Image (cartoon, helix red, strand yellow):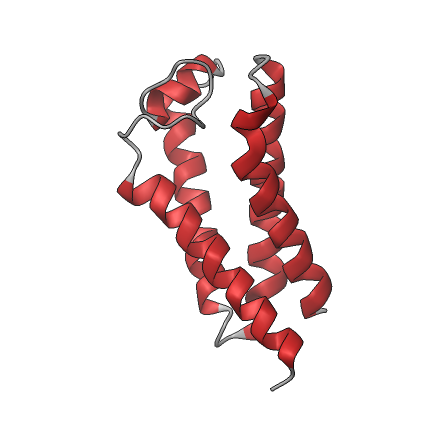
Length: 125
C-alpha cells in the first residue's frame, strides 16, 4: 500500500467519525460552532429558517454518507459518492452560516471537513 493511501484512510476516518460525533453523539449539546445562539442541532436548523423535518433529512444524509465514507476504506468504489455528497452538504453548512451572518469561526469545522473531503476525492482518483 502506498503512503498516500494511508493518508486517504486517515482523512476518511477523521471525517466519518467527526460527522457521526456531531449527529449521533452531540446533537443536543451546545457547542461554540452552532449557528446563531442555538443549543441543539434542531435549534440550529431553526436559526437557519429550516424545518425540523429538513434537519432530520440532512442528518440522515450526513450519517449515511459518513458511514459510506468509512465503508469506503474497504469498498473503495464508493469513495467518490461519499466524499462528494458530504462535500456538497458541508458547503451548504457554510452557506447557512454566512446567510445568517455568523462569525467566520463558526463555519470553520464545516470548512475544514470540506477541505478534507476535497483532498479525499483528489487523492483517491
